[in-house]
Image: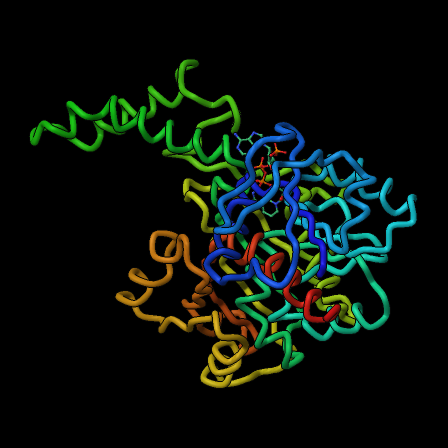
Length: 371
Ligand code: NAP
């Protein structure tokens, strides 16, 4: 029976992964072992099966007795343990949600509804390292796979509206506490029917500028504001998050000719759902109804939302999409710049398709490949 290690199962991505695996009854046909960096001997997750106490995630000898290691622990862990394991001659499969190995020559970035052929080629040629992509990139490709697969995309500009969860659990909690503070300070004015919006705005602006406002993790207010900078600076003037758009999408698809993707990545006050506004340059003029069909038929999770107010408000927002696997695409129309320019908008849960789901699915694909 295959032996599979799970590291980083209690973090944000890991716990969503565990939840999805239990939901899909994935824990059968292999022997799971759970590891920890902080609580050796402790109790593992409730997966509806008897499991042994937690093992040490730095015990490379034990880890290298596994056929597959699945880690959602983070880049520092990967950078420490992965090279050691390979140096020891371990030939198993390494599945990772961290970015550390994404751009390595001998790794594949996984998003099987979009690049199953690349994954299958990797498996048949002996690639053993499979990494989940950046959440924004994966969600963009899920949404626009139909245009890519028809070879229509010349370039994409994507302006993002990214959720707090992408920055980590503490940031997500900080957004909620910022909202709570603002709710509390404005309560009396909100309860007073005679108060004005301008008074409330003045109070909120004063509050978010106070040194007591909770900004330990974001550094600045996110509630009642936004942050047009995600991750570190790159020499190109992009942020690292913006840089990933082009390099990762081209690696995922293994395009022969680079298809540029660029834009500005912005953190907004959504909890776990990233949104993106696309300007897409097609390489030829295609009627809008044909474009809509291509987008809609690309995979079973894409949902085409008519470019009308009511369905857009009800189906194309983080509030509607949060916690689901649905990837709605809407606001689809030709742009004024010319018939090859398309506008579109999408939303997607960044902990599901943006992180845990591609990992869950590649694990199943590798298990199938080995059996
Ligand atoms: P995380 O929530 O910080 O969890 C990582 C590890 O931190 C856990 O497995 C756990 O390890 C430890 N930990 C310490 N205190 C904890 C607590 N109070 N609750 C839960 N775990 C705690 O990290 P993450 O956001 O899931 O990200 C994991 C990796 O996936 C990162 O490399 C990240 O870049 C990547 N990723 C994240 C996202 C995202 O949206 N967050 C999306 C795509 C990829 P022990 O059990 O060993 O202590």
